[in-house]
Length: 473
Image (cartoon, rainbow, N blue to C red; front, side, top):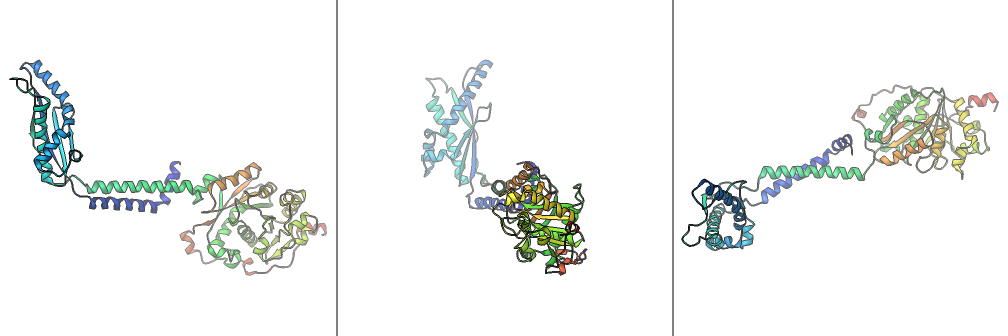
C-alpha cells in the first residue's frame, strides 16, 4: 500500500480511528481506575573488599568488589535472604511471591547495590527494603564470605541509604496508561482500516478509480433511489442534479477529439447492474435535447432493456436487421419531439456474439453513422461476454460505466484489460451511484436547456434516416 492510498484510507476512515482512540483512552482510564496503587521503597548498600594499605592493594580490592557485586545482586532475592525477612516482619507470603516484588540491581561500574521493594503499603515497602538490606549483609559476611581466624572480614556490606516511606505511588501512572491506551487504540483503528481495505476492494472515490483505470472521468451520477422506478430522469425530473449531471456528460462528449464528424459510442460496464442502460438512454435523450440527430441502439442481445426503459415496442429490432428479416428503416422508432431514434434489440438470438461481429452489423453501424450525428450503443457487460469489446472496435470507442461502492478494483481493471486486449479505444469513464455532493442540494433552479424532450412521454411518428431516403427505401 503506497503512502497516498494510506492517507486516503485514514482520511476516509476517521470515524473508525476516532472510535479506536476513544476506546483505547477509555480502556487506559479504566485500568488506571481499577488498579490498586503500588508504592516503591529503595535502600542502597555499599560493598567493600578488605586488603592491604598500599595503592595496589586498594585497586585490587576495588576490582574484586565490582566482580562480587554481580553475584550479591542475585543473592538478594534468594530464599536464604527472604525467608528470614518474612519471619522477622511476620509477612503472610512466600519467598517466591516476595521475590516477585523485589528488584536488586547495581549501577554500571560501581560497588553499590539497590534494593527496590514494591507493595500496597508504603510503610511496609520501606520496612521490607531495610530488612532485606540488613539480611543480605548478614548472609554475605557471615555465610558466604566469613572471616578466617583472627583476620578481619574480607568483604563488607553497609547500608549507605536506608529506605524511607514513599509518599506517592509509583503505579498506576494515569497519564502514561491513558496515553498508551490511546496509542494502542489508534494502531488498532489503523489495523482495522488496513484489513478492511485488503478485504473490501470496492471503488470508493475517484482516486480508487484512477488507480484501476488510466482513463478520464467524463461524468458522475449520484446515487438516487428513485432511479429504479423513474430511470429516465431527463424526462421525469429535468431540473434535478442527476439531469444536470447527464448534461455535463453530454458537454464532455461533444468536446472529445475522436477525429470524426459522426460519433458512435459503446456504453458498457464491467458487470451487470452498474447502470449502463439507464446511462445510455438518458445520454441519448440529452444529446437529442441539443438538437443533434441521435440513434440509440440496444446492442445487448442477451438482456435487452432499452425498449422497456423508453416505453416502445421491442418485438422487432436489431436482430431482425442482422438476420435479413427487416430493413433498418422499418425497425427504427422515432422517440419524442426531438431528433432521437431508437433501435430495439428485437428477439434474443442464440448467437449474439457472432451477429454483433458480422459484416451485417458493420453495415448497420455505417448506415447509422451516415444518418445520425451520434450513435449510442447499449452493450452487454465486458466481464461475462466479449460483445462490448467487439462493438467498441467497430465504433469510436467505449464509455465504461462504473458503479461506485459496488464494483471492485480488480473488476474494473479486468474490464479495462478486456478492452485493451481487443484493441478497442477507451474514451472515458462514467461513474454511477456516487455520493451526492452538498452542492446538489442547492441545484440551480432553472434548466439551461430548452427541455423540449422532457414534455414527451410517447413515441412519435417514424422518421426515415437520410441514407434510407436517398436509396428510396
